Length: 175
Image 1: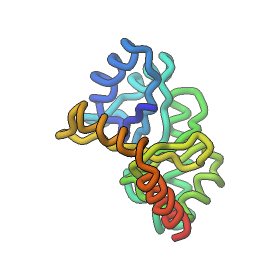
Image 2: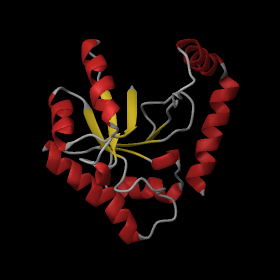
Image 3: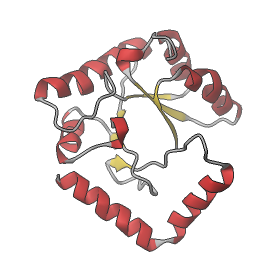
Image 4: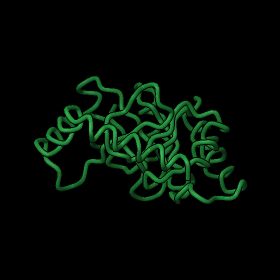
């Protein structure tokens, strides 16, 4: 799965055409409060990407950590932001990506309470389709095809790394 966070205009202008060219479905987690702002996707962009099979998900209203929020703040970040995106694309938003990849047991509980199918985080490692929280590898400006390939292959081959990641995720969920 290829995912993008924040809803930057480059998601639409660069990533979206490339994904279409190679017939790959991308998951785009947008910050609802930045839609139509300079440097971010417009409503029209999101509708077009959705129309062409891309998954549009929630990345919150204001890109702030979801850890330690009040119930009212969770409602804004997980319900109001979702509703704004759903109204734009005229479809349900089923997935959410935690800002900064940060989560704990309360965030997981709230994502489930708001009926998201999965939460996405920045924990590095291989994702398991059965897990509610989905790990992702972040790609940085200085990464190369070789560095990304090496990272993924090392996780695939290393049971120790996979076990450490699972323990780390478990500990986060217990916070």
